[in-house]
Image (cartoon, rainbow, N blue to C red):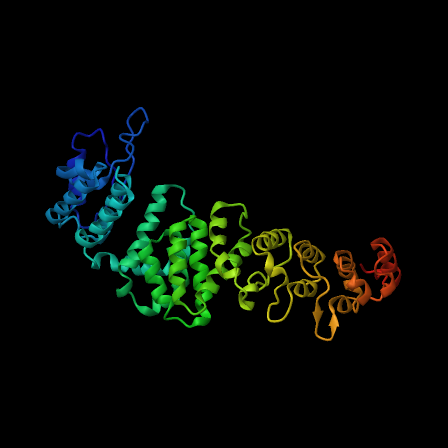
Length: 414
């Protein structure tokens, strides 16, 4: 049932109090009241503030500490109003907003929230909410907050989940751990990161990459360097955690086509340096472990990647050179990039040279031409049978390319 009140009525507040004490009446957290000229009267009038008139000045103010002390007295003295759980939740939301708007630093706000959640509101009132929010995290994570206030409300929901995490059914946590990891990246704190990675540690190692990627994805959306740093610390507890962390950053960049000039991307990418500068076959395959399409974006990323870590362009991945992987993708653009970054066009693969392998397939002739152009040692020219040893010192590249095109004409399909 909806009840309308006339603000111009002198008995407005007393009528509102009577309605609030009706056990079937549930208060909303806020509503607008307009003057006759159409302007908002005080912008937003908190219903609970009007109902609980003796304490309205402190609750409606931006003095968070005073509001908390008043709230505790209010709840104790108005049990009939707060017997409805929804009214209780609304009071909590009002105080959350009061703290958010307070002119105090972030550390003090977090301290206030801790008091609010631990001393003022009993656990049983919000355990059900925490469990429902955990189940709905996929939807919550998809919300794009339109304001800091809306963002703060989502943070409150995530914080409430962690407050009751030990009381929530472990099967529910297990089935929503991926969403929980992303929520921590977007809206969490360092303590929440620690808690989520304790849970991830109990999962099979085959699933670790999925969870690490979800958490890091959240930080890319929130641009939270402190949380990304905390994830980087905690990921070390996982098997191959450091590799998973760096692989996730690369994967996310390619999957989401991130702005490669973005400050946060560069901050995240710098985490990869210590590992990628080691001579490690597994790590050298970071860029190539994704089955991503070869397009303008992935080429731009590859260029940035190889500019940061140039030694990897000639570093075999499980005995397979990166340039050979590019040939397998038949990508002339990627081959050209590798050659520009210093890839060796004259590598030896089992039983034959790279140029000899490429010349076996007419569809790869354009790649063969790139290898010939890039080989300043001219060994590729010899291996392709385009010159004699006696010609090596005097023959020009133009002449060799003429012979190449005559000997290996492009098929009509190219």
